[in-house]
Each structure stands twice: as C-alpha cells, then as structure tokens.
Length: 112
Image (cartoon, rainbow, N blue to C red; front, top):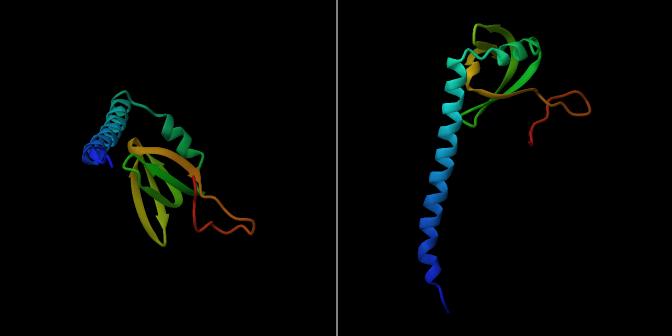
C-alpha cells in the first residue's frame, strides 16, 4: 500500500497554518490603515446602538457582549454584570444586537 503521501501531510498543515496567520495579519494592517485615514464610519454606526445589548466581533477573532453605554472619540463603553469595558473601535470588525429567543431572553448559543 502506498503511504508516501502521509509524510507530506504535516508540511501541508504547516503551510495552511501560515496562510491563516498571514490572513489575520493582513486584516490587522487594513484596520491600521483605516485608523490613519480617520475612519469615522464605525463611530456613527455605534451611536445607533447606544442603550442596546450588543455583540462586538474583534479583529483578534474574539467577542465582547454587553450593553453599549456611550461612544467616546474612537472607543465604546460596554457594561456587563456591573463592570465596564472600553473597546477601541479600530479593532471592531462587526457589531450587532445580541440575538434573543422567542420569549425575549438572550440566546445561550450564538451561531453565525
């Protein structure tokens, strides 16, 4: 049985992981360029969500959720469980209202 291709499998995996890192690095560079140009679109969009329960997706592929309290300069203040978080809008990729179920409660699992 020919299994010579199995020795190339780790090499293919490493190349794919390098591709994913490069893709993330390019995304961060594009965000940095947008900051230098004075991009204010996200600020205007964030002002529409003040007082709502929001879910923010960041460049680092993490999420932050809570109630959006205010938008200051290029940052937002989010409150959850009595604690406040300040997030720089340059690193926000997507912003949406937290999904709710039929009975009006927050969904425990958010699938995108």
